[in-house]
Amino acid sequence: MIKRIIASAVILLMLSFTGIYAIDFSYSASIENSGNKKYKAIRLTSEIYNNIQGNMADLELYSKENEPIPYFINSSEESDSIINAIYEMNEINSYVKDNYFYFDYTLKMPQDEDVTASSIKVETENKNFAKEVEIFGSYDNVKWEKVQEDIIYNVDGNRKLEIAFDGIKKYTHYRFKISNNLEKISFTKVTLEHNNVIQEQEYFSNTIEPKFTTEESDSKTVVKISNLKNLKLSSITLKTDSRFKRLVTFNGFESKMLYNLEFENTKYKDLTIPLGQYRVTEDTAEIIISNQDDKPLEILGIEVKYLVDELVFDGSAADEYILKYGNSESKEPKNYDISNYKEQILKEGYDVLSIKEIKKENSNDNNEQQLDLKLIFNIVLCAIAVVLGIIIIRKLKK
Image (cartoon, rainbow, N blue to C red; front, side, top):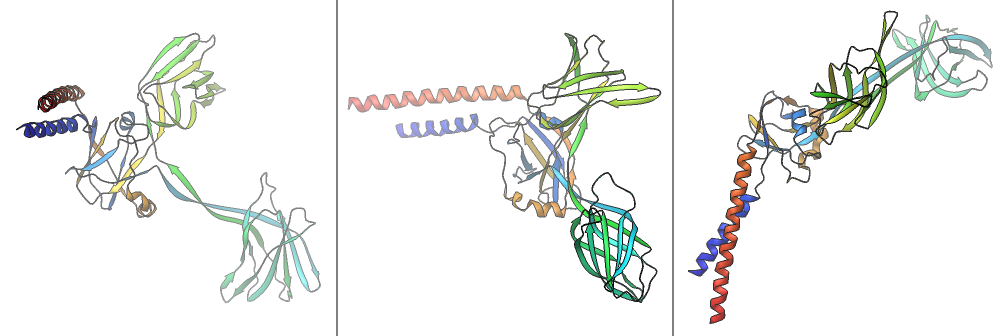
């Protein structure tokens, strides 16, 4: 009988312990599946950022059957930027030496910056020829360095009149060296060209107009902006029709002279403070405007641009998903196997899903439930202590 009592007490203790320390989330967001791609993504909103941990450890994704869904976080996309620059050249000299024909060219228009080129291209009225050409480069038209050796031709409609360089060149003068120019080939036009593909990384961003209040203190206007917690700010912009030029500081982090002026019907305006990726750790941030002896500005609004993250996952498991968040017990960010083939998934592409509804759990009910469970837990502990005490006393009497 005593063993049964102890066993029952232990089981009740374990159940109480589990109830007390069960992981609870303060918020849940419902997401409806759509699109025809295998992989899906959820773009986090400012409201979600405001109510999660700074390291996003408490973000958990589930199917509607409450099955956990692995994901990885993506914050940007890559795009190719093609640079096509063309620089015309003028012929400055031509001569013959040791059966070689030389043509010297320089830039038609002087440039303020270094001219970078990946190839040199010619145009000619000559036909039915194929010539070996050596290209030399110079910065001063005195000292020449060999750049490239190639063949140009125009035979039966087949043309190759561009010579690609091995790498980017920055010479201001170029020389053509052609052997045995019996055809008396000449060029009607010569251009330097720079064709390059640059990969650019663009971070996802969003813009909001948060609520704010203003107050005056010691010749300064203090603008308090709400609901910025955990946002990685890219920039913040004042909206005002006031004419001014004043020093503005954001959250003690960045200061800049902003202005909104007009002279002779020409407007001069800079109302934006760039912030890089500044993350706000508190719910409220401050803008301080130094007014000195001038009257305060009339602030019509605040525009905040912030960087956003996407949760990318395999969306073939369900037609509806639930994102749960807001749990202080989660300490480490999630690290799923799906992140090991992130590059392949990003190349394949994914559909971005919309958040339908965000629900907040009733914190009062949760707190009352936690108190009840703790009371039960304490009662069970006392009961076990009493039972164990009785057992020990009986054994000591024996």
